[in-house]
Length: 92
Image (tube, rainbow, N blue to C red; front, side, top):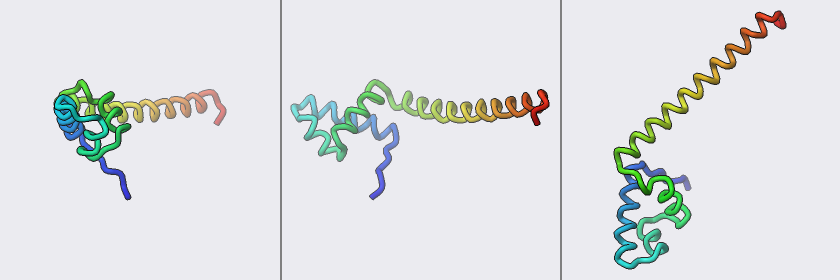
């Protein structure tokens, strides 16, 4: 059985729903069961997305993708630099 992936917008919606249920007196276990997630997932979501709005979550995901792309570019350029340095020193 594969993992179910949630979009940040969905996660924020579930967290808001959980806040409402908790305010009405439900326990964390009951809230997690209603949403269909584990308590560990709830606490991880709350840590990562608890204070974000939907717009901020979208921007965060965009920045994470850009960060991955930039890291790849730096790695490629560092490799090119190392190769050129070896060639210039005559180790080739």
